[in-house]
Amino acid sequence: MREQVLTRDAIANPKTKYGDAKASTRHFIVQRTTGAINIAFLLLLLFVVVRLAGEDRGAMVATIGSWYIGLPLAILLAIVTIHMRNGMRDILEDYFHGRTYSLYMMLNTLFCVFIALAGIASILKLVFWG
Amino acid sequence: MTVRSRPLSPHLQIYRWTITMAMSIAHRATGIANYAGTVLLVIWLGAAAIGPDQLAAVNGVYGSWFGQLVLFLFSFSLIHHMLGGIRHFIWDFIIGLEAGQREALAWANLAGSIVLTLLVWTVFVWVG
Image 1: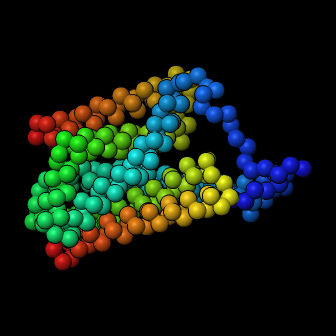
Image 2 (image 1 turned 60 degrees about the vertical axis):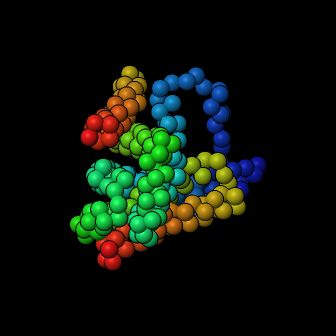
Image 3 (image 1 turned 90 degrees about the vertical axis):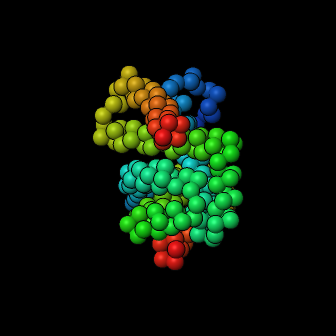
């Protein structure tokens, strides 16, 4: 967000991002929806970690390599990264403005994309190639 | 006409500490911790995908006392953030917003996260 003149019109105009109702509502709904789904992720994560903590590769392939565990885990991990990026956006908007904000937001996106790709690639490797 | 960005509120030291404020800050802090903690999950999954030696190395680190301490705190952070999120869901339905109720929910968030974390580690690690 660029520094700008704060007038009544500036706040009412959606393009100034002061009162963008659509973007804000979407942000809210996405964060609540992904948050609710993350409860399922935590339950699956608990199951996987309890079963596999300290176990060898054969056990990892046997459990996460089963498509009915691996594929839901991969999808839920992707949803987690959406929630992460959205949540970090809230924090960055509070403390940074202008170009600094844009830079941190880009790093935020890169980190979440990296986590999603690395996690999903690892899981798919276990599912399809053992 | 003045040029300025969004108005700022006074910073934390102005306010008297309340449990709702503390749990709001904790929700943000645990969110950041969970954000960073996903790296631990991806390292574990990645090591398993790469090979047995890499997985054994990661298991060695995660199984050490320090690794277990970090994972314990990570699990607490995840549970605290989950209960905090459920608290926000309850508030979204305009329930529990009255004076007294919101403080009770905040205390329940704190107590529930401690109890649930200890329960999970007792059942699945220390006893199981």
